[in-house]
Length: 540
Image (tube, rainbow, N blue to C red; front, side):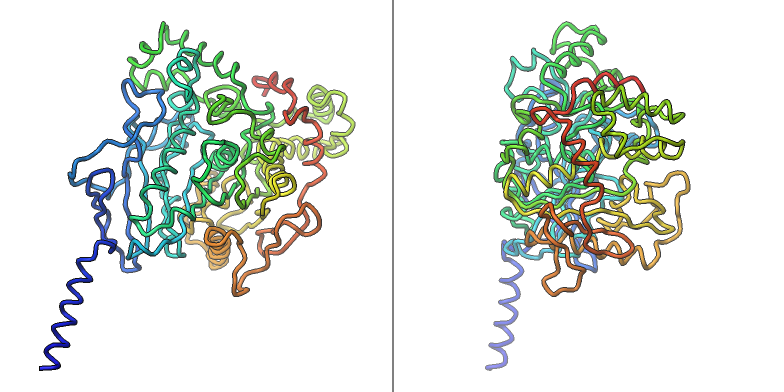
């Protein structure tokens, strides 16, 4: 009889446990609906794809701040496939996203190994790059399985791009204080959705790390500088981006953005925002495509100062220590410039380079040529390209880290990615992403010789190292392994060995190219880069 009672108790206990509301299975109730995700894998990962975090920004909601997601009234929804990609504004077909593009694109994706809603796993929210003109969370490169297996919950999402995401017009100002930077407002809405719902997937809404690369890294910097992001995240990782600056200067101003918007309205022969909203999305999008030979921040629609999400240039905010007071990890790659050669000063000959440097730097030309010399063809080529990489990516990423620590008084860590292998021959722009996610398929950074063979063991080891640093930081605000299993990463101080080189060996180094970075910083007036640089928009 005693054995029977024990057996019955065990059975009933199991039934009670199975009925517990805090268990996480492949269906989750959110937005008033029941979302059916992909069943848990043998490794323990659940995937939920394409869950709306905002109402579709279509019709009268085009160029409006994101609205709350529609209440689904208990209906069952499929969450086993990615949602639509947002419209891409890029000309190059090899960079365009799949044909499945739509204005109805504001969805999130979640990878989790949690089995119980009380687990409170740290959350990492990925923001993709693409110059704010192209990109999508559905790219296989961004699959979150490996990071979920490393002990975090990975979230990704889509945000509006190009003219559909960043149009500015005075008539829009009359409608709402949030009258532009709709793509950034989408990012804020996604973070609010994470705050309100991630516990359903076993995540901790009080331990959220945002991270992104290129435009995603710039997004992290812009969100750090925005007063509207307070409390929505607790750590930030900036990969190759910070202020959305370039060789054309600091962030687009309020008036510049509206002049650009008015020019588009006239191009489309629309007399009002109502007429613009009545046009097909393809027609509006195709009227403002980005030519890769120019700067998207200076030629098409991208983040600008809007006196709302972005009240002033982020460099000003960081210079005053007014950004969000959270730990950050920030860095850049050794060969960023290989992606931005169109931004280089003319340098067909040493004489061409010296002349163009004179036009660009004015009375600071002699100082510039000490750091970016051009006495020979090789020097002129190397210096022109290094300057482009510094201005578009490296310098501002360092400066954001430096200001955040030395002015804002916050904890920060800096990295310099130099790793190379047959799989990843150059540490160029985007080269670290495969290693961050651990998705070592065809390396999209090197389209001229796609390495289709499997990654070597060295590449897998590098990925494991980087993922450990990134997830350690997400868990505790410190990338170092508490058990000492990784090379020590010193915190940034501005002095001595305060960067970590992520190369074929990981080790502490002095801040790379610090004299060049300080020189560029010295060119600022009231934290803003020279407005005269705007004149170079079409000179390349």
